Image (spheres, rainbow, N blue to C red):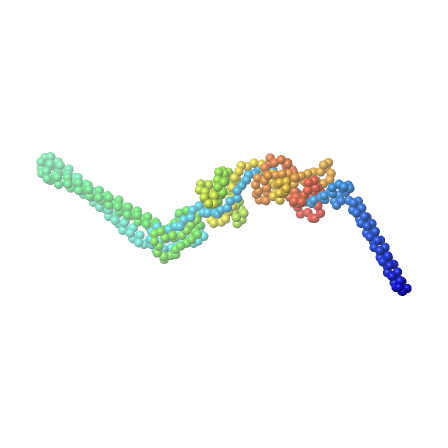
Amino acid sequence: MSEADKNSMNGQGENRGRRTVTIAVMALVLVVVTVVVIQTIQRAPSAGGSGGQGGPPTLPPAAVYVTDIIRENTRDEAMVTGTFRATSHADVAAREAGAVAEVLVDEGDSVKTGTILAKLDERRVSALLNEARAALESAENLVRQRDAERARASKDLEMKQALRGREAISASDLLDAEKMMTVAIAQHRSAEDGIKAAQSRLEFLKVQQADLTVVAPFDGVVVARNVEPGEWVAAGTVIASIVAMNPIEAWLRVPARHSSRANSDLAAFRVRRSSSGEIFKPTKATAIPDVDGRSQLFTLVATIENADGSLIPGESVTGIVPVADAKPYWRIPVNAVVQSPRGTIVQVVQAPEGGEGLPTGRAVPVRVAFERNGNAYVDATNEGFKDGDQIVVEGNERLRPGQSLMIRTAGEGAEPKAP
């Protein structure tokens, strides 16, 4: 082996030695740094608190919104749907045939009982009325004639009876006089019956004449006008349609399970107009005892005053029907109720011991009786509440047992504040 080869091999060995030393030093430095970092982490305080070494970490305060719990005397109510209906809806028809002479109303007109809707041509009836009056007068004159004839026959019979007693006339003459008297009485009665017939005919024609004027049968509003002047209408032809507006009825469809309570407390029964949200109290409520076999619903009719006519038949309504007795409940916003592994709970604000520090949340189990208008109602006998308590309505989903609270108020910025 030459001297150059030996020198080359010596140089490579020295380089490998230096690399080995460098790697060992770097490994030693890495171990030292790792040990220092671990010791620093162990000595550092836990997030949100200064727990001792080996103890559990302290949770940071939770920012929450709270509200007061309220005791309220109320009851469960069923919300049912329905519509307004007119108490009366009439298609007013002509009672006699005739030509329409005049129509006095239009759609939308308010009418009172007896208001004239239309008039039919009465010339024909007027002519018949004049004829009937003449016939009545003739019948009366005939009665007066028969009165005179009966009186003459009566006198003649009296004279002949006297003469017969003195045998001044024959029996045949007396029989003729009696016959004439009987005929006179019969003719008088017939003439009186003629007066009655003429009077009846006259009354009938007067009714016909009155029926040629079509009038409103009740107070209401005209919703349809079906004829125009000049048309010929038969008896029974609808002249106009009228609906009664005051009072108005709300027809509601109620589940059969509420049938025993549906109209037991009229004072708590209310009807809400869907279009405006207005609330009305009915003056009367009647349950129709007929449950639909398929839907298991029955009809409840509520009568409502509508003096200004603002409520219109066909509008959608909601009935607020009491279905339980009134008693005390805790009124709690629905957002305050949390479904947790421990069941249904509400977080009640618990004051700190000694009055120092932050309040904490205390989970109270609840059983919601019913919900209404964004609130849950819990029987007031439920333990864990008292008047003046505050409950968490926002931020309660993430609360942990014993976690302190930073209470915010509505409209406050991001920075929470302690009470």
